Image (cartoon, rainbow, N blue to C red):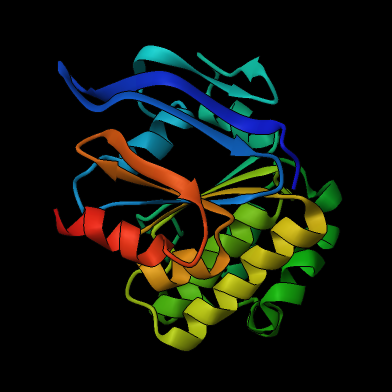
Length: 235
């Protein structure tokens, strides 16, 4: 992990219509680290991720990746430039096969075979069931396919929204192992939005709590992190 900022949010605000959901958030995510952003439902976590990707327009502030502004760039351009996104909403094409869902992550088939083999290393069941329709997978298997598709381009920055929601512990543990390996072995920077404290704090280098669209607290992950986060979530 480097001290250099991979992702820098400077006083960003955004929302829907005339209402700002995110209020002047400043946050730095270091290169190669896993940063957990936690908070209750309705606090603006998903809105923050969508604002970084340009899916929601900023009303104030700026977003930079590798010290370069990404303001005004299309989400498709950002993903092509190395930003991966695993959204909370099911983004899979339910009637398409695993193979086709993975293929749609790339704009060209030139790197398809290598990218597929890479994610098969994490999730071997995908290779064994390539022809199976995504809609017939279990909830946990669909979440792993969503993550696998986000990893197909070997992103340098990965945004993940509530990946553990509704999953059994064994699947959560598998996803935790994948994310830790991505950060440690490939230098992937990960911004993880989560409500599952145990999962988030088991892999995070640093954390923050978002409350009513603003950062309520943040720190390096340590022995007292869980109690501090819980205290903020109870208020």
